[in-house]
Image 1 (cartoon, rainbow, N blue to C red):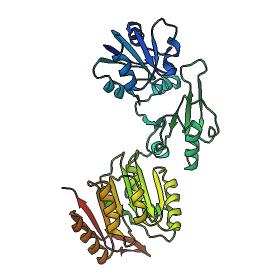
Image 2: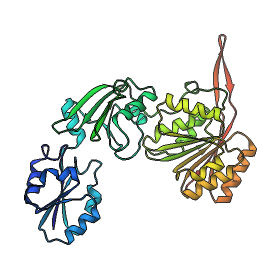
Image 3: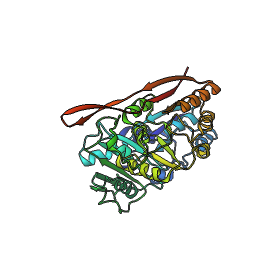
Image 4: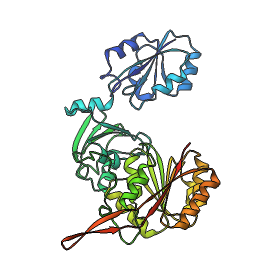
Length: 396
């Protein structure tokens, strides 16, 4: 059977392409979710209200149509279920018909270029909002479910980005279409329909991934902090990907958590810290650097890590004497974890190498001694920081 999976554009009818119209005319049955098929109930062809691939496959197997059209909103390649549907219909001759996706439609209405836009789907799921906006000039959010346009605006306001320009597109393509523009603070209480998208414009976005952030940029208090040079080497050595899940054990001020978070823009950093005072500093620093992808876990690490999601990367800057339990828990969740531990004492170095040996890890050990300059009167003096051992698991 020939099965056309048709991207219907924004409204399902008016923005349908000529190729999509032709495919629907050839089809003997029209299938799709309620909103997609509503306009075709009186077309004289069988109409099936269904979006689940297995059920569609079962229906087509029980009927002898020569061609069927399955209607999908937007475009088949933009956060669409079309690929999964095609897998469920692998026994048929499946063809994708592209549609006009919601960002294409909105940018056209705004008369804006979208070639450098970043796309985030919040349709029925959570995501990193502030981090995405901080890292990109343009970020398009596909909304739906619990995450509304107002919630996105409020999140931006909570992280000091209430002045960012946002454009909200509600029921795009329909007769009651509404497009609103303003700052996040101005639109933080807006009420919109569920069928809604949001575009954030941030001209002051980060032109590069922040790294080796100077110590004095962080809120400090009296909490110990991994210094910038050590932090840069330790975090870069973890080879953090954009979608990674990271653990920062012994979060301290949150400086390592922040440097992890800017690298895993679409991932999450779980910053574990037993001190409430330090946890408060982590919160202040994640807000300062726009890292809403940092999740603060307060308590003893050995008690918390069992409930944390499977990590891709783990940094341990303080273990509270429970290094073995923490590393063991991480290893049990992911035998291929990328792991780095820092130590300032020979005892911690010895404990770490023993744990690595016990678990069969190959250790790469680097000792870094940083000396900074300090102006004293007319002279420039040298000021040495404590040497630090960086113990990295070598994946072989």
